[in-house]
Image (tube, rainbow, N blue to C red):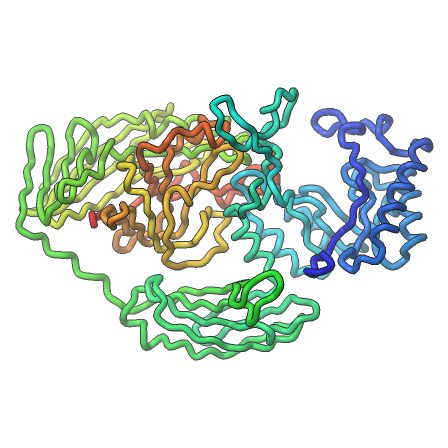
Length: 623
């Protein structure tokens, strides 16, 4: 940390959580260790004394801490005094005083565990006497770190000093299984009872030291340089304490419908602690006519290699989207083909493609291109996602149990076939969700002899006090070879409603890379703000999904496992060998949350209200 310039709070190795509280954090002061028990004072003072004398000359250490989650008492007052006797310059931190304000003098910093952003702001805006640090916050367990921007936004208050995400690395151990394979195991897997099971899996980095998708969000929100892009300028806020931005390269790019078409390198010299608005002459006129939207991007990068990264490594970025003037392409005129409206099925054939819609099986039952089949099972309505660790901790599963099978067991109660013209047919299916309300959902397919299909799914909204919906859209089973994914949306890593400080662009990945191996299998691989996605095999054949004209972007994922496979598995190696691919095309999915993993729900603005209409409108094509 001295070498790389990482600031530290150096904390005494002391934690007695459990000695001073009962389950539910019911305070039992009389049993607290060390508390005010004189016979503990010598050992505890010796411990903090040894730490300070060992680490006194490390420049990376900015603050001393008396320990973690050990309540408070006279012993901590003695420890505090010893630290300041040795080192009168560095401040002392201790969170335990929040449980007994008679000991506020034991810390120089106001510091709390897992306080929500609104509670922290209430402290900061009332002329506080001490600076504030979140000594633990944003519990990064499994698929987490949602609504993190609510915390980093508090940096606008001078006395907000940031916080520490719990945790950095998943704690898990490789263990050999009865079949001879080796896999990661966590609490409870070694005969230990009672256990907190996967509660050790709360890192920004997996146990094998590979970054989790959450790191994408943290990197952008923790960047010291903030970039705000406009059509004629870029505003750079340099929150570095000592370093000017003149030491970095800024790469400007224009993306036309997600593809880079222009790039330029600049040097912007903004002093430390300053904000400057700088004019940029974006070449919009050159590209506006050829795109429906342009992305203007400014990327801060290392101008030269350091001992921790290569030259060109990106530190932060800013983007804005401006409308292009490209007109929507005129619909491709249907070619000569065959439309057959039969007693049991409706078929559309043309351009080497065939669409088969069943009156009795409730939807699309075959979609082929040159005899390649893309429908193994009829695309099904989904109202569910595999629970995240935060979902389980907040009770989302219990509260939303009706949505678990609402789409899975929905039944088709009616269909309507309309031949629009000699080349086009529309099949509309009414589904009754498997809920007490039996809400009606409409799924319609409009197919023509070009082989293109419009898929429209409509949820009308259900009046009443219903739980919010985890996800809404279609889950589609594809042959296993269609595992490659290319998409235009927020990426490259997975994103969610409350975790999408990501780049808008065109990204290439596959279902296996997109499956984040959280210790407990759970929802993963979602991509937000998607304009189009291509799901292909190794030869580039496959399915293209695009938002319909005038429709909103959609969310989607491609996984080697279904939502229910993920929900049932306790470890990654319990997931079956992939035999299919599972495509989810969603109008919406709720956020993942992140305040903590045992109580706090996803924030209300990132839920899907059940009393509001939801619409998914996408075009399908085979490529």
